[in-house]
Length: 197
Image (cartoon, rainbow, N blue to C red; front, side):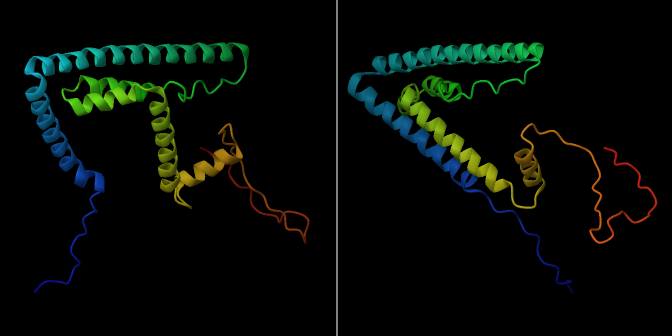
């Protein structure tokens, strides 16, 4: 006879894990179909040259974005060193809202992947207004997810509240002593040990 124990619960699969394999399969089928249609219309050599041109352009874009990211990183380090030598607080550096190197690299990667749909998506990511709009959308989505993850009463929420009240993020160790308003003095007790980290 079984003991009536509840069956183990399995965590629910996210939508991304459920639909990502299906979306990849559909994308591959569409890429192959589109390549055969275009090859039938303009010739196989033209399609081959388009794919090679996309790969070369993607490599150039990734190289340019990598150089820009390295230049931004070295500039941020120089600013931090100058601020440390002068005794000032370091600035936050660039926020990336003007250049969006991550999306530029993604565009280059999409250009390097063989296929016409990925090439069109990569070319769209090379357009600065589209890159900026996608960057703003990604930042807002990330902030929403971070705020949703910080449920009230959680440890992350406590750290967030501490940073709101102390923008520099410093933690001050101490002890809270409450004085009774009616007595005006602290009742006699044994001394407490200090708080240690």
